[in-house]
Length: 150
Image (cartoon, rainbow, N blue to C red; front, top):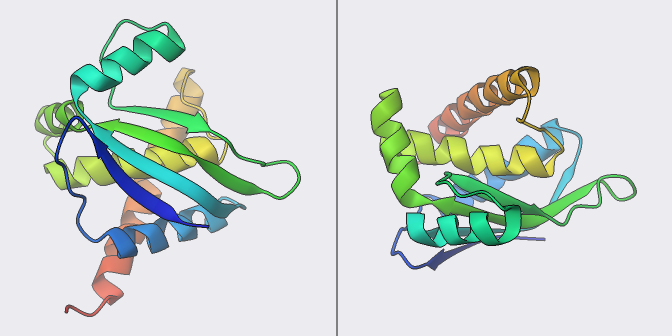
């Protein structure tokens, strides 16, 4: 079981990949699941717009699309492909007053929360998603502080 990182139509490099993978394993465990094979694909806004149109029938930009291949019922293993539009994430960071990396971490954990079954389509589920993102971003800060510098 592994977390892997790829790019498609961009050259983004997520820092601290190993530490991020460990953090995501902890998030899944906290949610009651085991993290299986998860691929993060960082891509351009145009690429994710094409996918949004093709697979979801939506004609708008979005920061993340999650394709869920999880077995949450039997094995409780979460797996999937998480496509992240780096341009929209950067735009959102500016809009919300966050750093680009902070917003990227929010979207990264957002994808895993979707794999763990957390929705965000209703006002209530969206508010719950944001609370969980905030909680796990605090986990990240603690994980990062406990890791010795190279």
